[in-house]
Amino acid sequence: STPAPVTLIGLGPMGRAMVRSLLRAGHPVTVWNRTASRADELVAEGATLAASPAEAVAASEVVVLSLTDYQAMYEVLASATGALAGRTLVNLSSDTPEVTREAARWAEGHGARFLTGGVMVPAVMVGTDACYVYYSGERDVVDRHRSTLAVIGEPRYVGQDPAAAQLFYQAQLAVFLTALAGLLQGTAMVRSAGVSAADFVPQAFGTLTQLPAMVAGTDEELDSGSYPGDQSTATMMGATADHILRTSAALGLDLALPGAVHSLYERAIAAGHGGDNWTSLFEIVRGTSA
Ligand code: NDP
Image (cartoon, rainbow, N blue to C red; front, side, top):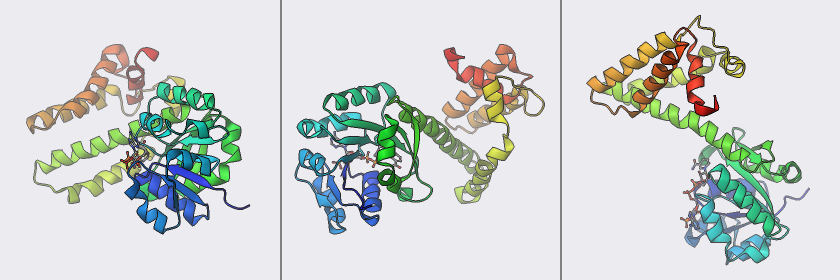
């Protein structure tokens, strides 16, 4: 079938990458951005610049929003609410669960369908086979626009609650941001001995890529709440966490990250999990929901 028209509002790195993927796939693309000059190259490549948000919304049934947060959506669409009826808004901006739910009610109040999404790759990977996007909202809306959405990345539907995609997005980013911070901590430790990042970072990448094999079975332990301590006990790992904290202190490094990790082990051991596997820290991480 003929590629459907798509409107893209928000031309940061992500929005621009999405426009280029859609143009390459043959979709007519209408764009709007607060700073209009960010559309110049895209117009040269075949996109149409709308004169206003209302004109942009009117141009396509599918309207993708790629903005810094949801407040930006309200600011942009304030003058376009009359054009929203019958449109499908696909908001790929990050925000908190409750803000997302409120936005879905707001959009539906104006007669629009609303999907929430979280793109799980950086801009350079948008539109590649590695790109996938969590979606939540009405499943039939995702299904109806699947071939268009798939141009940006593989759609992964995670539920009707508009907040679900945000939750999955942020859960993945919790893993990602913590790993990135750990990479910097480790690099700072060896750097104190004069070792360059060029020497150390590739070795740290090895640790990251071997991680799945090293912690095989983790998911089963977390799901069952049983943490048999036959390999890497909380006591053993906690002793190492203590060494990392004290080494970092001796080196004059920032202690926020090693302090946080050490605190998880310390509290798990205090709660009686010392002889259990390191996965028993899950009971601490879950807080009052445990
Ligand atoms: P940026 O945050 O750099 O910018 C996004 C756009 O938001 C710009 O077009 C900007 O307009 C617009 N904007 C911000 N505030 C307002 C406002 N009050 N009114 C109107 N327009 C506004 O975006 P990215 O492209 O990096 O990211 C977009 C979304 O994608 C974010 O939610 C981000 O969390 C998410 N994301 C980003 C990834 C990345 O690697 N960058 C990866 C995965 C997801 P203007 O040009 O005028 O400033």
